[in-house]
Length: 225
Image (cartoon, rainbow, N blue to C red):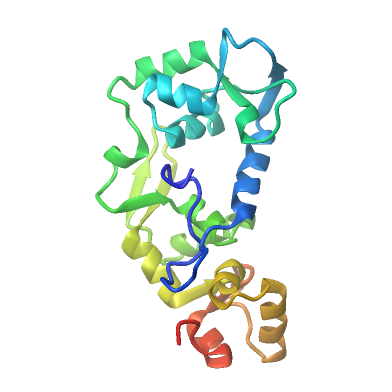
């Protein structure tokens, strides 16, 4: 999952021992559960996602993207739990492969250094609701260096390593704070409130528990000090 950029570390601070969150894996499973159309038992016509990846050589991130945008129907094998229960139709996978004969995935089509979609990065740092990270990008308050316009005219933003570094240099979220300071985010937010530190906003536009790093470090000090 990490290799396919479906799970992104919540901080790029090198001294943080465990930048990955179990919650992100759970959230991915929950997101996929919401897309399940039915339960199946027929292994002849259905295969688990990892098996589909291995058989077709299509990247697992590309497969899940196809599930999310409706090109692939998602089902679950009866009596199986968690990520390994999710399966896709072999016929639909074959069609997806035929339509993408050069194993097209996000990576090769984008500029060097692109890590993931802006939305995926936003979710990884806890900015899940109300398209908070995308609104931050659209307001040009944090960079997303690569934009793809879909056939339907929708702009899809992607972030590079330097974009992510720029975000972390300027901002912290409840998730990245918890990882950096190794303290529960609720405790940190309470301390910020008590210290008079307000979440970042631009005019009347708020972005949830997003703070300027300079304000947080003024109260808590630098996490790598």
